[in-house]
Image (tube, rainbow, N blue to C red; front, side):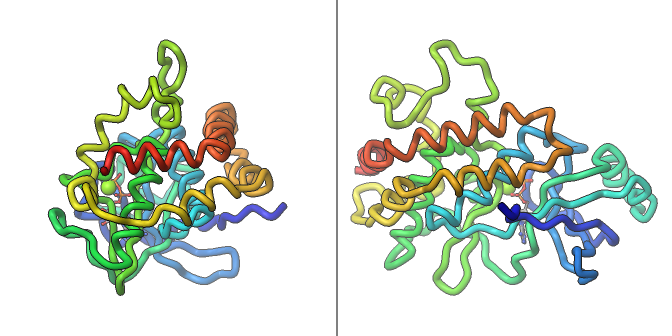
Length: 268
Ligand SMILES: Nc1ncnc2c1ncn2[C@@H]1O[C@H](COP(=O)(O)OP(=O)(O)O)[C@@H](O)[C@H]1O
Ligand SMILES: [Mg+2]
């Protein structure tokens, strides 16, 4: 099965992104056909670790399969000598600590960041509700009013930034990882949803989560397997973590209805 992920090599440095915790970098990269593309790279050298990069990668591949628009993921090779072209000392240190393969996404170009406090309306309300349900599933507490991680363009809402997704699988939790389709788990562990960027705008509103539910229920083993295949051999020391994420997603398919009911319950 062909991996759905392109490998590119960093060749130039444009800037550090103004928003975000990880100091993502806009880089010029050569793709396999020798074209130059702009990539927002989230390097391992600062707070990111390989598990977070795997969470980003699997989430970016999974999102479109359940109807969530995101940015196109790529694997960015940072050559060992790449830091020498960067003048800023702290950036060059991050780059030095990140040589090898890192997670990135193709530059989206023009977009607006979601204006916090705005209530989604029209078709955007269904899109926002799907993003909310998606974050319930991946247990992503990082799409908050203080840090929306939502972009908008021509009426379309999209997402980025999933390094905090699935972190519950990385921590030893007594009684096992919480699952949003298990009533006992719903009581605890999902308080973060009240901070979600769309919580107040969707609360008490009418929206359609059926397409999300149907797509999740219909996710195939082939799709799930393709996420695992896309994790590069270079990250194999975290192979177990990739498997844990995919197994969790596999289990969620038969729980899609209960998951969506929970999301609706939180927003009722
Ligand atoms: N594919 C992309 N194209 C353009 N800008 C992007 C892209 N991905 C991220 N960004 C911008 O870079 C910022 C940092 O990326 P993000 O993934 O949110 O990293 P962090 O973990 O540092 O918050 C985002 O807030 C957004 O403005
Ligand atoms: Mg961010």
